Image 1: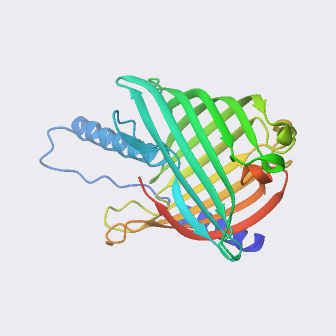
Image 2: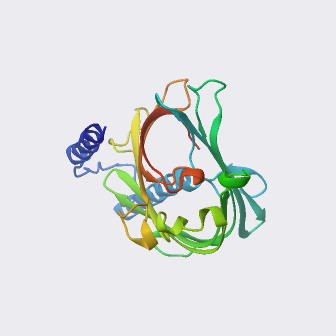
Amino acid sequence: MRRFLCAACLAAVLSISASVGVAIAQNDPSSPSPQGEVRDEEVTADAKTDDAVEQVLGTDDTGRFTPHRLNYGVINGNDAKMQFSLKYRLIRDFGLYFAYTNLIVWDVWEYSTPYRDINFKPELFYRWRPDLKWIYSADAGYWHNSNGKDGEKDRAWDRLFGRVNMTVPLWHFDLVWLTAIYYTFNKNEANDDIENYLGWWETAFFIRDLLPRAEDKDNLDFEYHLVSGDHGRPFDRGSQMLGLRYKFKKAAFQPHLYLQYFNGYGEVILEYNKRSEELRFGLALPY
């Protein structure tokens, strides 16, 4: 499985390298001036960058639910995994949000097909939009994760967080980079040692449209998530997740094909101290 993952990553890198080139601008005789053309291109680039960020963070619309994290369902020979995530802007012209994420790992191949664990992840946070070139927004708030079980399987974790959401245009694609730090102020006795496995920071980056941009062609998105390990040390426990999405531009079929690889601890909070490695395939629901 690891060899397959390495080959897939190498193929993605090679496709990026092969497609990088210098765009040749075409002169438009009807344009009033070269300066006007530059301004139009800048406006178009800004619009594409905003679209790239919204595909990761969701829109900031007031008065209705909008996506928060990626919504998807994937499956393999061991189980199925689903995530549903929404947010709601509480006050008009003020960046206060309530968000909710539901993560499910489902033993679909076992008799009676029980859920292995269901994680409930509400958030309350404030989003600030600074006037800075690469920082799209910054978030600060409260995050909770629990599984609603009783007894020995009961798990719960409460943290405060700060998160920076950055965007950088690179050649023909866009890089969206998220980094968060956490402060734990409450955890259940049953998972009192959870920070020995999942640390106080995490980072993720998303590359949208790996293939040269074309409005009428299919394309690929790539994502990578790294959760720090034992008291913040990277690659010492923690987890890594990679995802590749194939997007249909013109087909009537709207979902994206989604390949996800997970390796590490805490895929669900019930198994925060158990290492797992899973390669799953399924569908992602685009924003």
